Picture: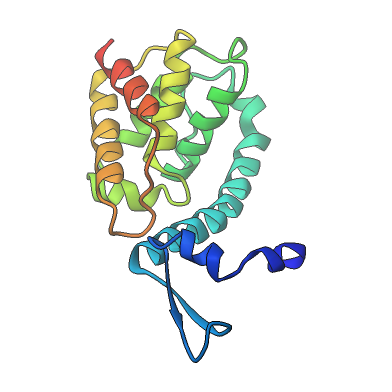
Length: 188
């Protein structure tokens, strides 16, 4: 904690009673602090997110190296895994896509949706999340890329499952604006 260690006192923990349970041990100067169940869940999610960021960075670097070769193509390579498709869609949504073939994002999403069931799809894209995919789809849609409904519906189902299923590890909450943009992308 470094220089902030002095700021974390019993009063600080008491302000966050949803996350911490503070009990006095022997006197007012000695207290025992324990994470509550909701606090532990939030801490676990943050820890998982930090670890996944490192894994995502590695996957982004791999796809970034092959991105210049992919931009003029219509289809992503068949050797790519589901998590690579997520990285590619995310990178395409961040890049200016004038050099990108108009069909590359659409075909990448179709390959990601594939013939895989929703729970298996969610497991296969780790360290990425389906909400990241939907953010990329919404961004690409705003730039004029079109996606087929048969590819969007399984992705939207997986994103909905991911958002509402908060007990299994790796499930995150997303801003409502992301959900709105994702639904609008599917409806157009």
